[in-house]
Image (cartoon, rainbow, N blue to C red):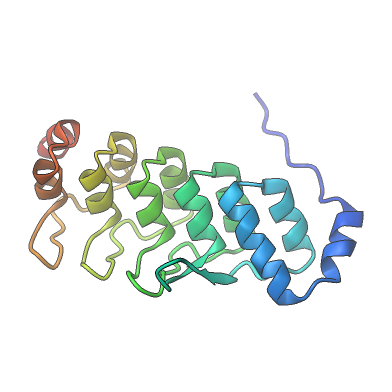
Length: 184
């Protein structure tokens, strides 16, 4: 099936959005990313919203719209943000996690595949020295882990505590991941 390109943003909506402050456009961009509302994202970006806008979470860590869309598993929203130039390896301010860490932790294999295709760092380290594969293994998300391994993620990476993704899978009794990570 041929892929259709998305419809152009509604020009009246874009005009209305341009009248908002940059801060408000950024707030709405993040909300649209969180909800996976791709059409709203396109309109906001066309109206000049900053694709790198950040918002603090409840812990005081700042996240980009791409972090929220990846965490929510919103493939079309992630694709829209990446296409608009979102930084694929942006870091949250506290734990230093990337959108790929969140897609892996939440088991969103399609988003993992998209971010990997956009050259996201497969072996990015968070504050604890953990890679996205550590996060997928710890939660038992085989689909996300398979995408990371297929792309060449380092299965032997050790976190600050010396643990590999396999160690975390064993510790959390995620047998499917244990099996996957012990195969060569």
